[in-house]
Image 1: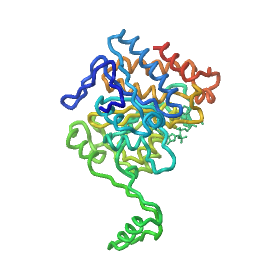
Image 2: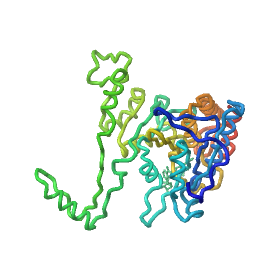
Image 3: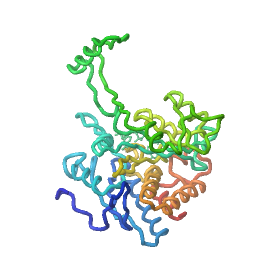
Length: 371
Ligand code: NAP
């Protein structure tokens, strides 16, 4: 690792053996605070995780937090937004957590989040969506939503292969495509071009070859009985948007391509009360980064105001990933209890009758109190 980033002072590195991570009792966990409201929600999250680990394991297990830099803080420190030593640390220590990062506007800088996913080949974006009792929702039965979305994370239009209208490359590609035989429609001259690569790398084949004993395609179900197997239902994207609204109880896991998965996970998060409560992770076989799914909400930066729920629930996913299930469940129960007590941040308070308005940090303290 480069000398610009001091090595961690405490903790041990998470190992990897036989396809699984091996977690010590004091794992080094890199964190990226994030831009905008990132520091506010990160401070609350760290407080909740540390407080819960202490209460649940009495000091036997603890996180050895290790700050690494990306976004505005990295730019101030190193003059670049995503330093190589940060990428090295995220890879080397295998499990990390991050706040939201702003995408610098102009200058051709790509989204740091997308870049992280592509460089580290974090091919799965995992987003569990569930309802917490009492959270204001725009639908009648939000409790029926309980799904985990597995969204392909490195391909599709996010691969970023695109050329502006009128560019030489766009003209060449249009010329090439319009010359192809058997094409009934022609691309209009002067169009911009974006390429959507999608491989056959995952999906049905894994379900049938690796998990054929526990899965069954919907088309093979005999007389409506699946014999306790997981039913694989093929749905086109527009139909799926209807299904998650009209029949959410019929779906537990969604496996989707990148862009559709992005839309679907935000739509589902809205159904259960908004992005302030939606967690997520980006994972490869060996490396996982847990992150808030919303952006930096810059207008609320440093006001100790926004909902830290998304990052705290991402930390809950991280604790499960580490195998620290008792702590994960304790936080989840405490969040449910805190919301049930109507002690919430502004985004929920403004929609809940009789709720008590808490700051970001106060919400974190209320959760630990309820653990
Ligand atoms: P945003 O930061 O998600 O904020 C949009 C609105 O969502 C906020 O004004 C606020 O609504 C609500 N919101 C977001 N986070 C909240 C929280 N923790 N608690 C309560 N309400 C919350 O979206 P944006 O303004 O489009 O994007 C800002 C920057 O974030 C951009 O630079 C974008 O590129 C970046 N971004 C980063 C990530 C990431 O790091 N994963 C993801 C998306 C966007 P109200 O105003 O109604 O209160």
